[in-house]
Image (cartoon, rainbow, N blue to C red; front, side, top):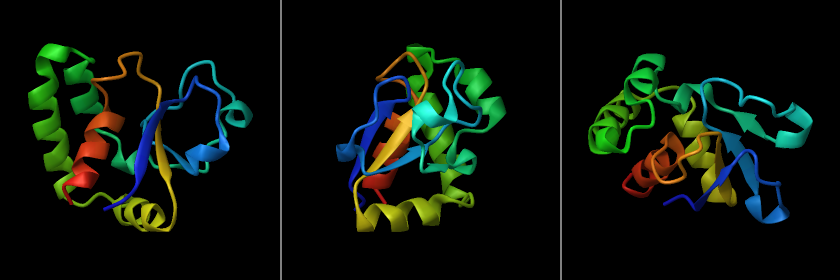
Length: 116
């Protein structure tokens, strides 16, 4: 399946990142487009606004968040095909802005892609 890595948008971009895809629904606070070096912003594969607000990066809700997020992804949001086709050509780095590096949509999305 796709070769993906994960990186916070606040970390410096590198060549090893390959194709950088922002998987947040809203643009990260305090980061210019130039500094972010994002190749593609795929809002459509980010969790819905309702799910994001419900989760609120609470580790206690992590399992349920992934279940609900995977259900949203199973509905086939536009952009998922583009993401998987890009990932077959090269490394794709899923870029996110959350402070919690273990409990966020990029981690969940990477898990979802591995199980496809």
